Length: 228
View 1 (cartoon, rainbow, N blue to C red):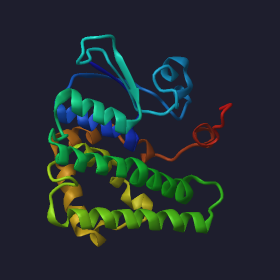
View 2: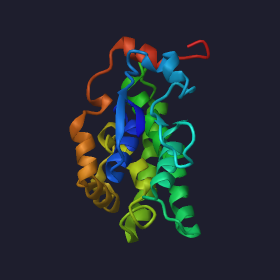
View 3: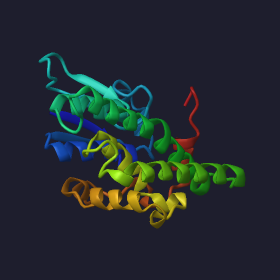
View 4: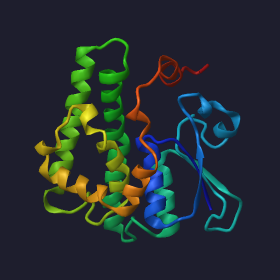
């Protein structure tokens, strides 16, 4: 059984999509990051970076004590290896998927997050910051579009690279992007959106960014230091 500590953000949706796609049993534990639940000692014990998602695998493959993980990319890789799904076993296929998984973790996710932050949440609208991150998201969409010109998915077959990337494209309008400018990316996006597991995840709960954020929530989420 997978115990999933989750909030409906792009990173949170990655894991629910995988679990639904793989048919893995899981219990969902909401962590309301707008109310500071990510700072509770019980959560910090498995996610010391105070970020969702995190999991506890109560029945790991080695039969030993439960395994806990944080960081969505690490969780996807762990679950793919545990189930044998959405990650090729051959050397070249595996390398192909992992490079695009790490591309998402190091680029698409952080740059999209910064674009959303400066364009929507920041109290002071800084034109340079807004333009810088929106242009970078546009560049990254262009990278995906070119990659998808001659293949259905980022690494050939549907994989954890696609599962990781899709939730960060869902809010494309917030990042001032037009998918019509990226026809191959749009085709990929619509194909994943139509998958039953993905439709189930997004039909069950609205993304956390679907409603305005209060000043208190902004203070909790954006005012953290080493002292919190």
